Length: 276
Image (cartoon, rainbow, N blue to C red; front, side, top):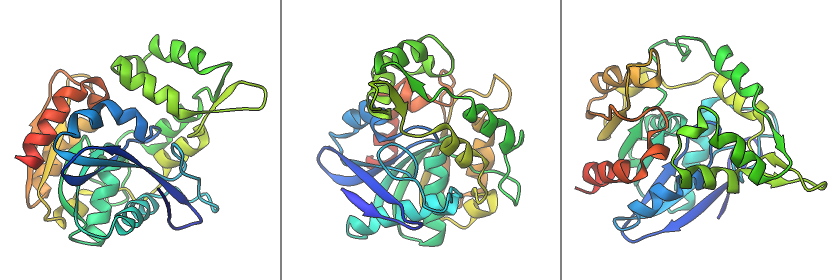
């Protein structure tokens, strides 16, 4: 399904099947819906699983005006919910996807029926700036290699290097299989161009703890380990404290890519939190 959003963006929604109430999967920065197919397969016994590619990610188009601020990501999610009929939906959000859905719910209460977010980006500063600053993360994203001779070459490289070698094999395969487009010379290029990913990391408008305090929807905030220095997991307890109806779940064996590292365990937690 193709859905028009703001700034000339067309959002692509993927239907991963299943039975039950609709659940919308919202991916992390630099990723796309299909990377979460192993998770969706586990959730499909309890939910009708759909997933959107945010602007500039996966099969969705980039904005005409280069607008990657996070209010635009919230626009994308709200446009998809409207296209699905406008009824409240269950949401799974990972990193940026969790932050964007929080912004959407603040803007239009009742959009989310309930949510499970794995390490959502919700920051303490009023300006929505991460502790190490958006520049460092954006600069890292700009250095991503954008083209490879083939998807097999990309898969070989990612499987041997951090951080993507932390993903479970099927999650990594899906990320590569659906994350590249073929060029006329037979080589392949990332669909989410490094400059798009960098712009998303560096953009303003990220949700803050003040945002979280205004959202009464029941939410589970799941985090991985906090033993490796600063990660988005560090914010988990503060987010839960700010939320009027939040609970914390700790997964000490997982990192920031937890849903892509162990989709079976995370799916079990999602089902228990939202369906139970």
